[in-house]
Length: 338
Ligand code: 13P
Image (cartoon, rainbow, N blue to C red):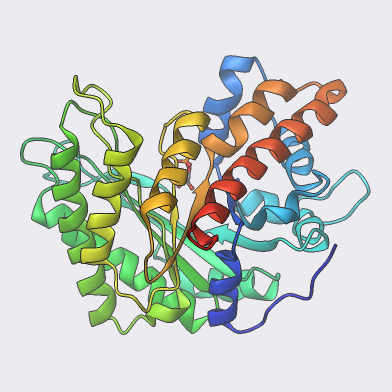
């Protein structure tokens, strides 16, 4: 059912983290969606990207669990087979459309292995166009790598500055910024090291957002969960991950931020959902806690579709089921404690 969309940025931010709902990140750039298509033998053509996004957005009932969807610039201009713009399909489902506005990462000069995100040039003009085209929120992803001496202070500060400038420009254009400082899982570090880097990152990001007068009540934070490195020999339980994650967030995120939406970052769909549920089980927190998964929401649907029109129904059922499970994980925490 189509519900009337909220209008003010504060209401949009809160609607994006409504109980039992989270965000579908479908904003893969052309090279990134190519990486997802390749193992399944799906050619990375404009038509396949269009058909895939149409499949996702027309999933019957998706709006029950998905509050918003993040688009890539190309998708904004694409039409369904019935000649409806793809963002209009989202709105028909009661899903708020938003857009990734960064231009991906490049090497940070003088800092081997570290990255900086591009895309501030001309951003003010693009944001006004996106707002006119009906987008209600934006996303910018910064990437941080964990190593014995990484991230460096220079890398943290450079990325925090760009996140703050992006957020301020988005708010100026009446758009809700989703601030995404992603700490990669790559490496053999222990979970405690990830917690340390998460705290340093949140400190740098919120100090800079505050210096740039970003209005916390009209933004969302999109962090990674606090995890051991993918090569670490000591696994962590869901409960430990949840405890470490909430501990860092409680120390680092002002209570006036309405919501925190986790990225999945290469966790399997099952891991991402069960850890999200674990975070909810322990978490009574100031902000709403939800998801903004890309891979962990899309993987079952993409595997079912495989680029074949005959599999559209199966893929939509897979997406709906994955969204339902994550919606349920987010709902759990909101239920009154027994
Ligand atoms: P993943 O959930 O696949 O990490 O993607 C989320 C995202 O939006 C990355 O920018």
